[in-house]
Image (cartoon, rainbow, N blue to C red; front, side, top):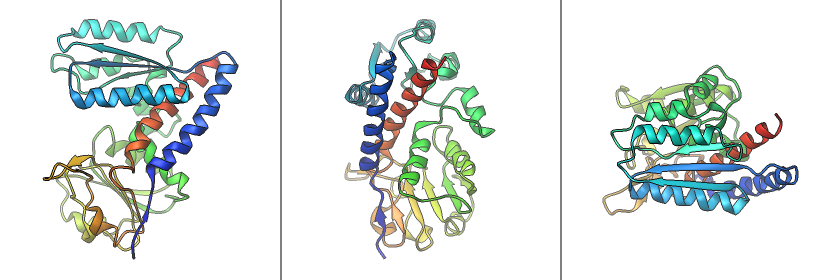
Length: 284
């Protein structure tokens, strides 16, 4: 058996087309969705991500503002900028690119963003709403996974989902969103004993551990759905995921590739959340 490939790039393209139509309707009614991205320092990967977000926003009609600051920006100055954006009626989503320089508290900055504009889904208010099952802004990567499964007509209801990884950005929210979709959920991590015994029971494996090719075919039961969140470089410098794709695809029922799987969904859901925020502000 060779797994069906879940094409995140194609799914993201379809969602962006739907968003573009919605943005045109909002504009016709007098609201242009606005996204502000703040980046501090010179981290090359962060700048690549920010440029991609800016380009993607403009392609579908979102007003995009990018604020680039040097690494020696003070915490006070950054918090002041966030407050300005909180009060800017043309901005519906605020994203501060992580990581930040060590002298700036990421927690303070995330807490300073208005929960109503927290399109990354990191603010404690929005995390709390996720925990209790309320509608809110969900963290973009796990939300992208849920949308991807939905578009592929893969229901989680009654299925056993095993999440490998417990980060606040992917692992935990992926587990909570799976619960909201009526799955039975197990969270595994670096201290989990007998990992393969657990993952072999899974109908769906979400790998978000950050180790190249960590999940292999012998972690899987035949026909399992495999979602690979990892973005790593292997020994040859090539992009790879947390799942050993070549071995896993011979056992899995469906699998996401790297690149072209979960990755394109992350920025798409950021755009989705920004449009959702603009719609909420327009309704006030």
